[in-house]
Image (tube, rainbow, N blue to C red; front, side, top):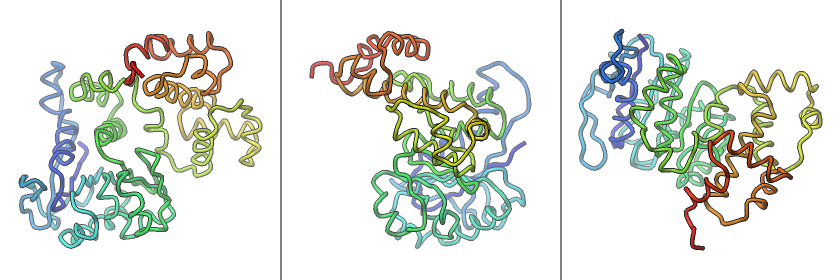
Length: 330
C-alpha cells in the first residue's frame, strides 16, 4: 500500500484538498463498488497539520486532520501540498512549520505535488532554484520577483523537475492527481478512477483528450526539455529532425533515443500531437477556414490533415468546429 500525506496548510482551499483525498481513495471502496472488483485498497491517505488540529480552510470551512507533523510516517510515497488561498507573504506567517517538513521529505527522495499558490512554499527553501516550475497565471509576475532563480514557465500547466510536480491550478490539479496515481500504481487504475470522477468534463471542454503535454514533461533530461519547448514554438515550420538534432548538438540517432526515452514518443509523434492540439484550439476559438488552419499548424494538404485529424479525434475538422466552436456567429 502506498502512503499519501496531504499537508493541511491553514487557509487552504477546501476543494483541492478534498480532491486529493477522494482521488486516491477512489481505488478503495468507491472504485471497487462501481467496478464490482475485489482487492486491497491501493493507498493510505492522511491529512497532516502542525499539531493534528483541523484545517481552517478559506471560506469558513473546517476539515479534520488525521495526524500531526510530529507523527508523520518515516516513509511517504507522495507528499501533497494543495492550494492556499492567501498570497504567499500572508500565508507564510501561519504555515512556517511546514517548510521543514517539505525540505526533510524532499531530501529523503519523496515526490512532492504542489498546487498553484502553494508553489512558493517549495521555492522558499530553494528546492526550485534553477529548476522548471509553474504556478497560477495571476501570480506569475509576483512569483518571478520573489523567486528569480526559478525557471518559471507560465505557459505550462504542469511541470516536473527535481522530483517536484507543480500545477497551475483549476481542473488541471485533478489531471495531475490521476497522472500521479498512474505512476504510483497502474495506468489502468488511474484511467478507471478518472472515468468515475471526470465523466463528461472533456466533452464539455471541447477537448478530445487531455492537453498534449500532460505527462510528457515528467522527466529530467534538460536538453530534451529545450527541444520540447523549441518544437512548441516552431510547430508550424517544415521540420527536418536531422537538422533539429544538429541544432541541439546531438547525432540523429542519439536525439531519437533520448527523446523517446524522456517522453515516450518519437519527435514526429510529439510534433503531430502539438499540431493537433493547436488545430483544435483554432477550430474552437476562431472562424478561420479549414485550409488556413491546416497551413497555420504546419501542413500543406488539407485533405491529408483532415484524415489525420479524424483518425485522432474520430470526427473531421469541420464536424469538430460545428460541435465545439465558441463563436459560431462571428
